[in-house]
Length: 326
Image (cartoon, rainbow, N blue to C red; front, side, top):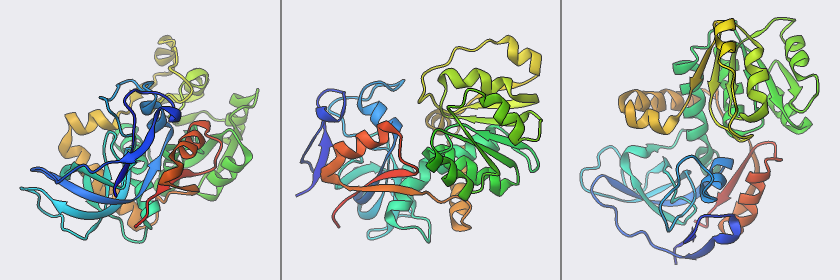
């Protein structure tokens, strides 16, 4: 019997139940996937609670990234085959044993990754690459400050920044997360909760301001991070786990710096060809080992509520993943 995590109203994990659910056969341009693993992110929990900037339709199944095996393909689908190991992304629908998704969001799984690693790879890797290369134009020898370096996209940004040849400064809230960032390519790591945070950032960069800020946090940290930028610096707004920040626009003028939005979903809608190229290049990064997810905890699908609570708390150094019975 196939199952899915479903709610008729948006809210916390207590609003959701694991119930029998079969999404049916794929339609034209769709693929049916037997899911082996699904990532659980803060954004997944935020969306499930109805607190994301766009609210999903009801009833709702959470989950935005997974890996599994193709069971069936709909009319018009090419390049994907039954029995093929794949990764997929979707705006919901993936905390389940089986899902039907658009074929355009499905890619062959990167070689060398387990199902759990592959499930966690695409969204964070796509975001990090789009942000740092396409939007931030990070160059070798520049300095990259990564906020929320213990999170999914933050760690991917640390790894990619190191791969590009930038000096990477990781800001994270716990010693475990800072140690993880250092083990994955950061040149320095600072305590995100330190009262003298800006001074620590400057010290970590040998007394100089930074060139690029990767910011999936928002809230109170955005302005001091922007103030830490050099002339012609770029501040990449990736998310707002710490809340939506208020920002003094004169700072951009005084620093000759740019505040740049990074929205992967709208990128795919408005620039599909470029977004597809970004996906292909991101997979190459996986194949050479430049970006690889770190798994903190694994839960069976039956323990989805615990997994969601863990992801919301954000204390784990690494990603949370749900694993389904094969």
